[in-house]
Length: 120
Image (cartoon, rainbow, N blue to C red):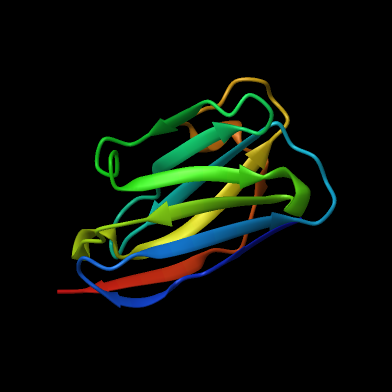
């Protein structure tokens, strides 16, 4: 139901845009989480599909932007000024609850993940 794409190998300071496309299902909130090497999965960003309010982890605030394209049923994560510590598998998640959440357990639907590797 969720298809994430856009990962790749980049250098520090570069940009990437991740995409998360839904296969016709409608959800109210979307989020990106990531899991780095030997780390727990962590929250990155979330948004409400209709209202558009957004929340970010402190580690990415000012560098990453979550947005959505209603016509394409796609949520994006624009990542600028990437750092080696951003290296991780990035997952998109969605749910039908009303309020965007920073908690993984609040998301019922998950994409398969896309790998982002940032070299120094």
